[in-house]
Length: 165
Image (tube, rainbow, N blue to C red; front, side, top):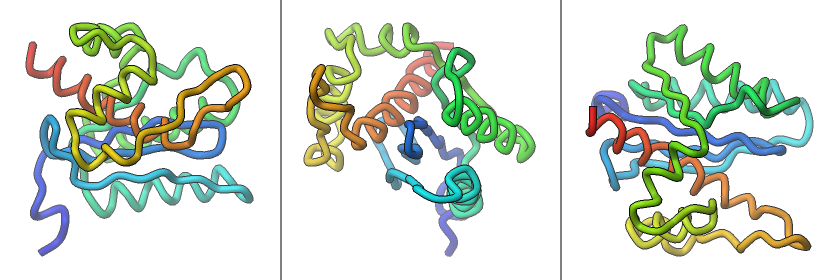
């Protein structure tokens, strides 16, 4: 039995970074199926595009959730634009959420920053409990694991918004 035949209506959430993207596949709120962090050093765009396409082929998700990317520049903007285009060409529903929309969903539990939102996700999804990223400071760059939690926040925002409509 293929992954696609076992899981219908999957949500793929992806969050690009300067080196790649974090991704999570959910079959329902608080029910992750798979997750990971993709990165590439050489032939970056080509390798990341292929990785994204393999995720789509393997899981055949119904929805792609992204964070608003029009204000981004460079590689992460191109990557988001490409992900959205490929998803739409496959007939997937695409949802793009602004940072304030994500914060509004998690604000009900007192989480506003990316790290605070990650803490909430860690407590709600046992599979992520040991993957908590280091807290970013002026000296410490963002932990690559933060992209995984940012992707999970997008999926949970999608479920929250779709439930309320």
